[in-house]
Image (tube, rainbow, N blue to C red; front, side):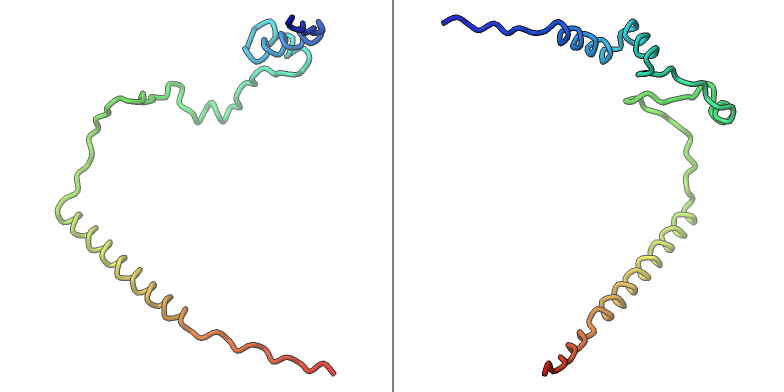
Length: 117
């Protein structure tokens, strides 16, 4: 049984090729896209952006170990932090008990229906 030949129009082939070049980032297609206002060139950053951003940001590559001098807490600072956290825990538990007691109020009685005579 012979296979049916699929005929494609040259316009479809050209459109597919152009779309492929545009999506692929081809320089020739980019020039055509910029000329037809389908793409734009990146604008220069505003002066305040250039002033506030560092020229050479020091990024830490993923997967690398960075060693920094971290200020260690003293025993007194640790005990103070522990006491603050404990006080906050007690405060949160008290607020939870209060909310639970407020939630135990009985629901209001249903409204009395008006007679319809």
